[in-house]
Amino acid sequence: MENFEFIEHTADIGVRVYGKSLEDLFQNCAQTLFSLLIDHKPAEKIEERIILEAETLEELLVTWLNELISLFYTYKFLPAEYDIAIEKDDKKKILRSVIKGEEFSPYENKMNREIKAATYHNLKIEKDSFGYKAEIIFDV
Image (cartoon, rainbow, N blue to C red; front, side, top):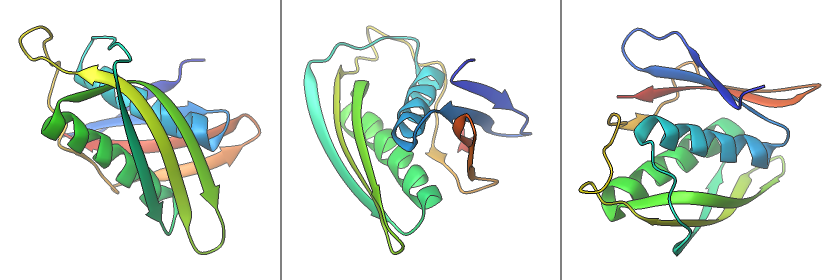
């Protein structure tokens, strides 16, 4: 099974992403995001650390993806590898991540499209017997 598939959406890009665990799901969502942006497999030259906190898993996922989008457009950071840990209790969800990647050069690699943000529109995270799945709409 692929890690993601497209879902219909009129103006933006919708995807359904799969993962065996929450960490796997969040990693696959990040990889899906960057596969939509660019066809380049980056090297692991630079390391970034991210710690995020949210009240729900859905909020944590959108915050995570938008943080990655911000790193890409602001600092030209293109992730290659993700080490993710998610802690959750009744009050908050915390994501801790070490990401390895490289600086993106628009002169060496062409972008497929611009993605402005991950949105809350029709956002879902569900658990079933195979693991987790998320449905996300990206604003383009």
